[in-house]
Length: 148
Image (tube, rainbow, N blue to C red; front, top):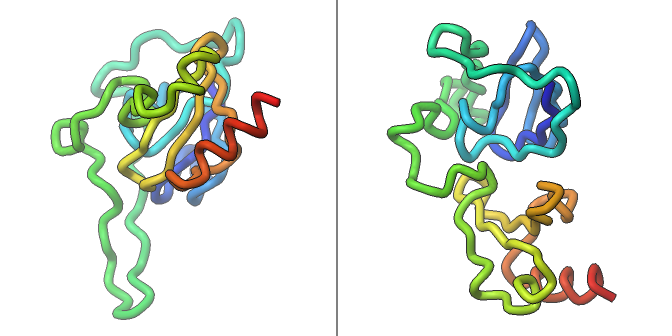
């Protein structure tokens, strides 16, 4: 079993709807199935799923309505082949090299193209340190405060 944070769009599993920012418990590895849409928060012991095959995928989220025109608009691409190439961590593009203070303290910084936010991750525990995405200008102050 996994615990994720939904960072882009919406998601439906077992007839329950989730919107951006929600925490989702799932037996599926949603980071693998929906790149750039989820951040892994925790892997719960003894309930880790085995590899999911193509036919055991969770339902595709329903598109949300465009508030201006009332028409359905698709979310970010769900097909991994159409998504921008990023590392398979699920956090986005690793930009840690731009932040020596993060690197020297064993932390990684990722830029996520889905929500255009930045996430600071402890790679040893796979824990996302900032509760929600932060802007580029907020990274250094966050690191300064976190590492005090």
